[in-house]
Amino acid sequence: MSGKAINISKTTAAHALSYSLTAHYGLPHGHAVALTLPAIFEANAATTDNDLNDPRGMAYVHTIIRDLCTLLGVDSPTKATQRIEMLMAIIGLSDTWLSDHGFDRFEAHNIVMKGVVLERLANNTRRLNRMLIEKIAASIW
Image 1 (tube, one colour):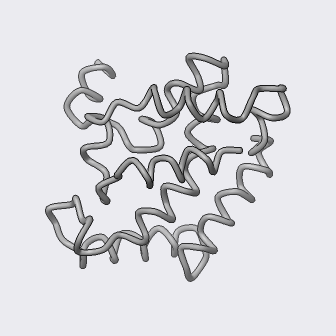
Image 2 (spheres, rainbow, N blue to C red):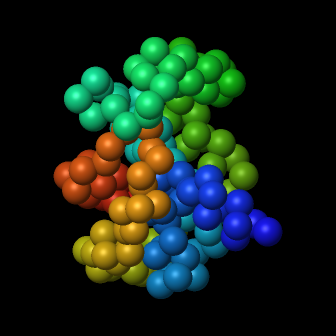
Image 3 (tube, rainbow, N blue to C red):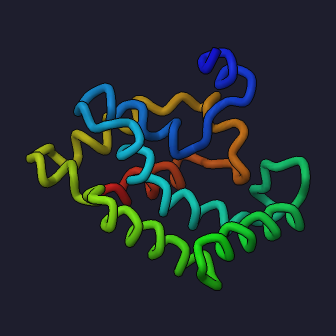
């Protein structure tokens, strides 16, 4: 049933970019998702009319970003990403897991980039072009 649910609703960008980390390195999937979440949050917070992918419009995106910041107890997307990173540390999720385990940065970056299934990014608030995906992938190190 969960597979059917994901097929209908699709996944988030954080999930889409983290599958290969789990498959290739054995990094638990939730931890892999958490690694990409701060950069994706920041990228989505910077959505513009030119790269808007959400049919509900920019006002909706601004409201959601503001609501998420409020839920995190902060007043800006930058502080939200810092709060996410702090919460990761509190629960013991290392943001340097790949380097801590001796994995090569460039190999890991290439594995993430090769493992991206663009269809899984289709429902992201912001259209993610290759340059932005590269930036997000680089943030996990």
